[in-house]
Length: 388
Image (tube, rainbow, N blue to C red; front, side, top):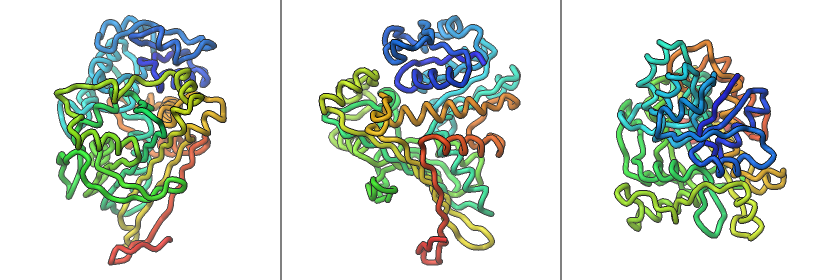
């Protein structure tokens, strides 16, 4: 397949290299060609064309001839890139939503009829969270007769002297200033930022840590597919605690815009290596948990999925210079491309993929360096939990 990756930053550059290893013909588009080349590395033969995600015709010119457009740019450009993809008559894949026109439904679904008319597929929100988390939630729901709730819990931690963007700085800022979406008793509503504090226990070595409500796309995807009453997403870790502290100090507001001192540009691999050598960046962790509560044969059960990913230290030992979130997201997106459902048409979320495709993606993810496990617990009437 001929694949055009738009946005060759920390995630897009690694994703392009993974797709090339799969045997695809790959080229990238980015506004800053020189910086994109630094992300790809000197040994990379992947071509980088100048393309501005704000300009539809710039994308069309750079992506001409592509069978698939992979949008690794900030979600604020989703609608422009979707229109450009339709002009190219190509398939489409992206990593997250911006939730602009409708606060509780991803903007990509507004293009469903247009992709059906072109007989093309748009697979949206196809990374780790959202992406893998949606697949695990759907898989858990299939193991139950009825579902009461789905809870997403994420852990993001960077041990560094200064603020460091391990993910797109623009995406991190957008999530920090956005109000969390929550689905309660069958209805959507907007919660206050950083509220809903709870103590959640992640697998070792993380352990128990406070988590808070966060703006995550899963909450606006799963209720349209699953018959569920409650869905929410919470994040913990020192990265999120830093954002919470800035918010309480009044340093996070939409009117002030993004402050680069707090949300610096994503580090190039060379810059990551330099900070590690200087001791400014020591380690980083990323983990996800998906809890599905429901009934099976009139018995209340809790299905818990845990997914852990290589730490920064482990990646460095393997000779890889990237961050855990970028590494995990790029690998999962590459797996979604590997199992891309070209026989479907229209806009499709991960939880809407055919069952055999969803299971193949989870199996592929498990075969990598990702540890994905599930536990089932029996819930008593007083909500005490017994391991099954």
